[in-house]
Image (cartoon, rainbow, N blue to C red; front, side, top):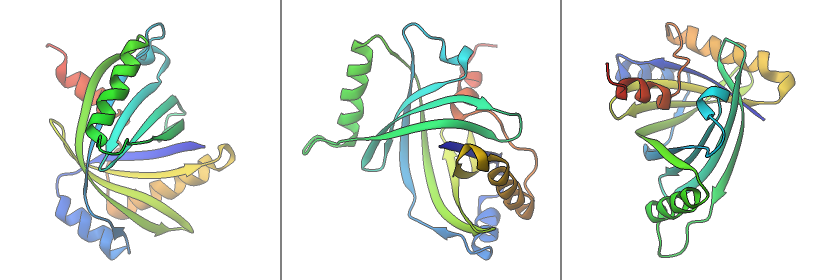
Length: 190
């Protein structure tokens, strides 16, 4: 499966939320997410445009590999995401730390954490269930993410669907960089 995503900076979260609710978006409770990204010991993920992360998503932990971006429109990439069992009595934060310890023992290096509050929603649109998120990202600000998972043959349809939602909301140009890329740009000395 491929993740097709469009992301936009937000200047007015309340207005965007109200617009989404008028379009029948169904919001779920906000969750805290911590995503820890890793560098491969012998492969430059930045050069090959891949990512490996561990993410604590409320009470769950997942490990995700994201392949190189395809095309120039949306941020479209192959994604493999697997749940990590949170050991009884350990909790998701401790599980994240133990998996970090394992990856570092294998030669991976933690690069950066992305910490955000996510307000997820589902929006029925053009026969699809668009995953919507209003994210408040530490050190970056507020963003709207629109996402669909699609098979290879459905990528143009998925992109068209997301672009239609964005147009309906009056979004400008999408931000192609990941939160990690934006934070690394902020971190670089000038």
